[in-house]
Amino acid sequence: MLDWRQYETILLDMDGTVLDLAFDNYFWRELIPRCLARSRRMSQVKVRAELFEQYASKQGSLDWYCLDYWSAQLDLDIRALKNACSQRIRFLPGAREFLTTISRMDKRLVLVTNAHEHTLAVKKDVTGLERYFDLFVSSHEFGCAKEQARFWPLLQSHIDFDPATTLFIDDSLPVLDAAGEFGISNIVAVTRPDTRQPDNSPGIHRGVNSVVSLI
Image (cartoon, rainbow, N blue to C red; front, side, top):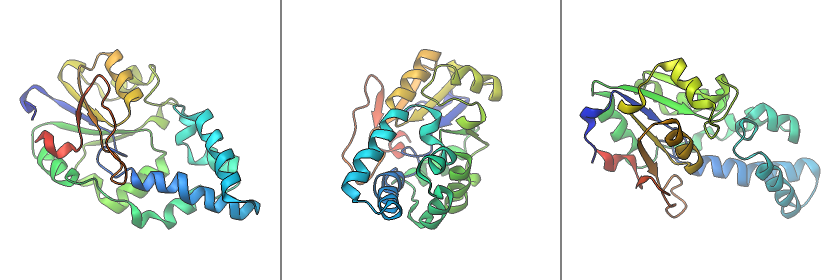
């Protein structure tokens, strides 16, 4: 458990921190290859191999998270596909209880995500995230992903937080490392972002398999 009195601002990631990353992994690793194989009239095995190479070349960049980029690259209506399977979007176990508890504290709760604006809108609509957060920030507003060093001063300028009294929770080690290098010392890694997968390593950071254990 944490001493919540020392924090004024709570920065929370979305996918893999409060929402189950199983949806995103299904979407990009199962649904998109299947749709692409059908549209190209190719085997899924071949399509998956080529597609995953494309993914790897963009991982950590803003393009990796951009629906419009992948729609253009793959000639698929990614937004429509995202809408069509939105019923699969779920909270991670305990995340709703955590958000309910924290939102009742005298803290500023900010969701900071790499998700594209359309993805964020869909997930807000499905889950009702707006009832918990004071502010939503997508890295697409700044033109750089959370993994990149220049994101953090831009975020600080945008929402005016003190790194010394800020808690940041995310499931991505490159993102957490970038936040730490910026000066946020209060960092927690979620080690089980996908309920269909085993726990990940928290790296050098404090790790919890679910945010609910922090309360």
